[in-house]
Image (cartoon, rainbow, N blue to C red; front, side, top):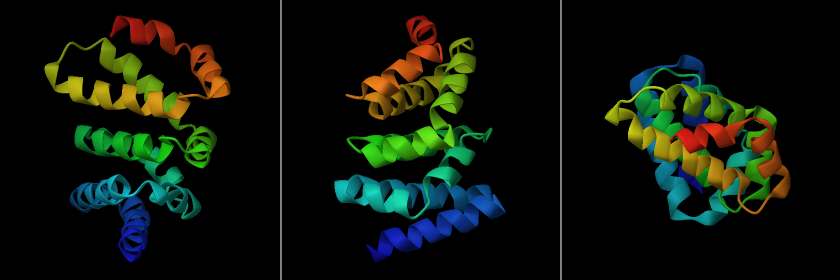
Length: 147
């Protein structure tokens, strides 16, 4: 748990500093911590991690977007608290906007990012009728069909 706490503190500091190298390293550490234990999701929400992660979705750096999408997808996986926090922070809309812009660009380098963002939305809305309806109302279906 100390490892996660240290990583979360570093992420908050890095999100303010916006130093790309330290940001990528921090996100990699965070992903490793999330992947190791499903009980880490709620502490991530409680530590206020979701808002800085959602803000990172505005980055132009593809690696930052990739790692951020993975982290948010992991936090949302089978976690009502994670889904709710991502919903409140507006993360789904930003991801949908990215999907819309990426699906119009035929670049093989985007395939991994498209996969991660689709997985994030799946984890976000899985077994949650309300969030599924929200995504439908946001117009995600035509974008997914294009992919």
